[in-house]
Amino acid sequence: MRSRHYLIFLFLGVIVIAGSMAGCIRNTNTVKGQTIVVCSGAGLMKPMNELIRLFENKTGIKVEVHYGGSGEIFGVLQTTGCDVFIPGAWYYMQQAMKKGYILDSTVKNVTYHIPVIAVPKGNPKGIHSLKDLAKPGVRVVLGDPRACAIGRVAKKILEKNGLWVKVKPNIVTFAPTVNQLIVYITTGQADAAIIWEDMTTWAQSKGKIEVIKIPRKQNIIKTIPTAVTIYAKKDGHLEAAKAFNNFIANHTKIWEKWGFKPWNG
Image (cartoon, rainbow, N blue to C red; front, side):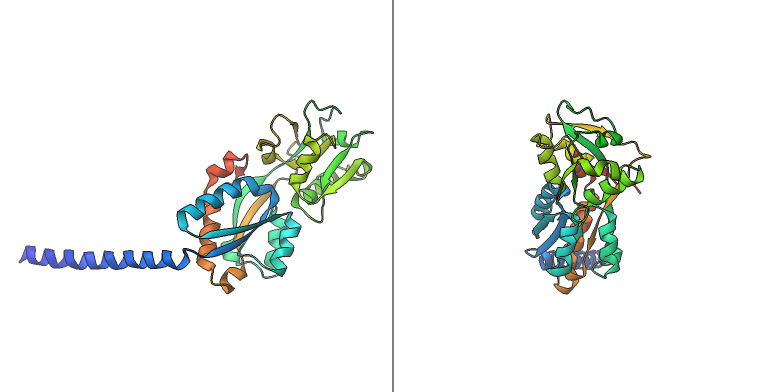
């Protein structure tokens, strides 16, 4: 009798396990082949490209990404929309949440964004601190405060240290993305810029720039968030968007590889 009962329970167990596995397969098939649209800050391009490749290979979900300054991608979110929103600073996430574009329960902190001063190799103008950006003859390039997170932050850092008015006459241009600031420095078109520390690990920067760290008391360190938007729910991409949102938040090793410091709460 005992062995008979054992066989019955075993049979029922197999049926339950098979049923749950079938459910998993059905859930996977529902999102496999879907395409989600991601709005990402331009300064996150290197790790994001790698994360997207890994995610697509693992899940079968396709990812279209729009890179731009945080102000630009916030504009895209408000007009054409996207399924996942990853700006370069919390300010833009807060604005998106206030306007009702974000599913608040999906917001996650991903990494820290640390501003530094970048100068051309050899540091020809002898820049060693924020106050040196105000020295006569120093050509400074900054991000556009209306277009990208690094622009807003750079202006706030200079204001915090009583330097904005002094440095402003030395600013030769405002760039719409942080990536363009690197170009100005590596090609010798400017003597100093305030960029994100993680960008100093990029191939475009290696051997071409030097970095001056900004003391913590003078600096304004930002956090990069990610979240699923209301469009993912409207378009039937909610599960795929949530999967991507969780994926990029959890793959800290890739962020570290590209010079980012993962958020540790």
